[in-house]
Image (cartoon, rainbow, N blue to C red; front, side, top):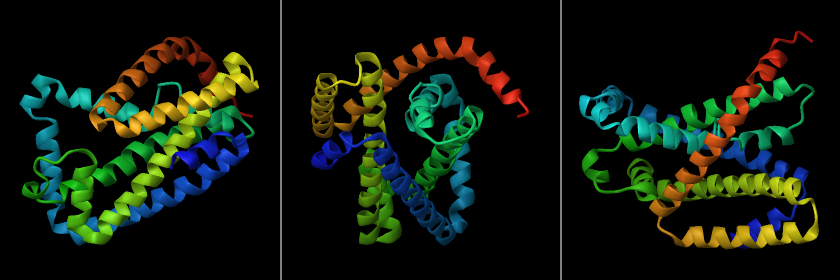
Length: 248
């Protein structure tokens, strides 16, 4: 995987965007269709699922502890990166006649990512009896749920989907960083080569660490990005509103 990623890093912008244009829609649609199949198959359990969601999300214990809010903010930011300042890199690479049009399309990604894809994952896991998934976390939890719904095919399917999700995320983030390094240091050989080495080393180390450490580091990084970004975009929001108000 690292060899493939290393090759993708050195690709030009258009090649990277084309790879994402192919991978992302396919994996999202397939994952959504499989989730719909699982929901239809277990449609009689859906009322209990929604009851559990509201009970565990809005209970007095959860409100008092603040756990719901903390998890919602952390996972929401990590999922769609809305407000963190990284999404504009993707929007800037897109083709569009007007910046406001590109921005509106980019905002649609928040809906698809968080509301659709994350809800799919939640439904897959919540439609499994609690005694089967008890004590499991992270990818083990999702694989256990898919194995319950689809047998051995489910385990293979989720492994492939997770690979595609992870791979597309790596490509996107590496492209963001590559563009930012070029802006800060100039698009020269030494800065790009140093960046590629550091990026590959970090990817390798991240793949060996426990997922809790990786998540914690991600939460800290995105949190700091969001604070800095909000300081900038709040004063600039008037310009965005003016562009949206334009009739032409």
